[in-house]
Length: 408
Image 1 (cartoon, rainbow, N blue to C red):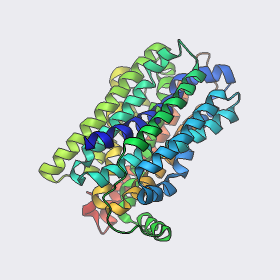
Image 2: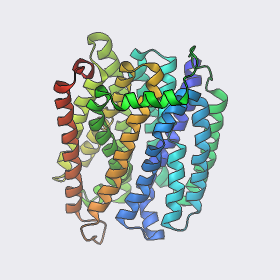
Image 3: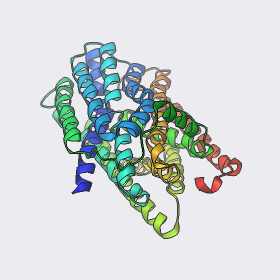
Image 4: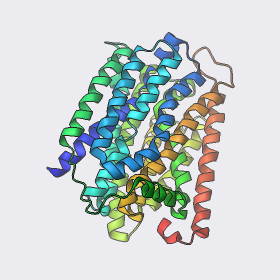
């Protein structure tokens, strides 16, 4: 019963957050047609969600550690609802951006509030699996932003969809306020805000934190950008698939994304219990495979678009295990700030990747059906190089860190 009270309200909020994040992948054609957006405009519009999300992560960590997940997330979700209303009523790119910024701010606590609650209420050994279940909820939200959203557009337009989302978001806020327990099992007196920000600086100076953070941020940001926007255009322009077939493959990709979150979480928990293998080691292994799978996209994929999206969906989830790895390393009173600092880097990475891919694609002349396939090769090539640099930095950090055994 306690697990249900904690998990289901947080899962609902995160599912909504993921739907918001990925919805533009389906409605991008409508936005381009109705408002005349170019690829760089589309990349900017979709990525401003990430920048507002990212900017709020440092104060969010302090709020979570000070006031708890219940009050923090339930209030912030009301800003997301307001953003959805403004997005639905927008008549220009600037109006869409304002709405999207508020949505990003409003859902900025949906994952971190859950991770904070789980750290407080459950043992650290269970965190990889429970965090994985939280990510499954996000995957279900992403699933809703594929074929179900495509079908919904047969009955209403994108404006109607976002108006409905505003009401659902308010409902989620109420559920969090009513059902999520307030007691956080913290007996000591709350530290001052000055001390909390000083402790945040300690995290930022930590060699342990910076050993894996760059790779995790770039890998996770790339996964968000590809899955949330650029996979469907790639399937259309490079693989030559129709809009319906592309939506079906996005659906399949999201299913494997859900499977990856759950499976890797279970594997990490079992390996930790049986062989004392840390989640970060499993995460690095998965992110390395993810990097190589992306590399095949430079050359048009691996033959079958279905196999490609399955591999991308599954191994694109590997970076999430870093959060559980940090939770096992840093003290509980810092858990909110550690997670949100990493999340800041992840969403800054997602912002740069999503907008940057659009900017690179726009360097090539548009084709009659979309964008030049060579432009995708260049954009993905840059992403692969960035992730390779992050992997090399991680390997170097194992040798230069005085606490390398913790990273392993």
